[in-house]
Image (tube, rainbow, N blue to C red; front, side, top):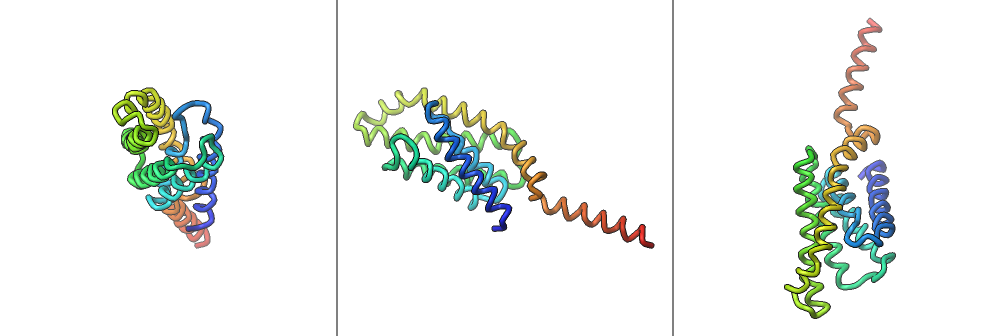
Length: 183
């Protein structure tokens, strides 16, 4: 991992943690899935998974409720989001991004709802019925975040100078112009 990638990933983890803390008043709204998918789409599934895992784990230290058995589900869903983001590594169009973030959100919501029904003793079916508004809010907010991924990815690749292939081509063109001017 080069320094640019490391700093961007640290920024994504920090953004996910701070965003989750600041948005905790809005039930089921969190930016961690967005950052994990964005990291996966930029740097591959391993770095995306590391971003999601780190942001969920660290944010739980600062959230109401803290660490608990749900942390395993949070970490699992962060890893899944980053892994799925890796599917967008070559191209992150809106439709593909929409599908990835929807699957990632469901991979969070379904295990979380099942475990809530078991941990708190009101049953899995009752847990699913009571979780519907939260699932809808989580899915809607993540779909909203997903609209930002293709544009954010493009900006980071261009401004962060991570599109090395394009940079290399432009340098070759400049070198050819310079060599023609010298002759």
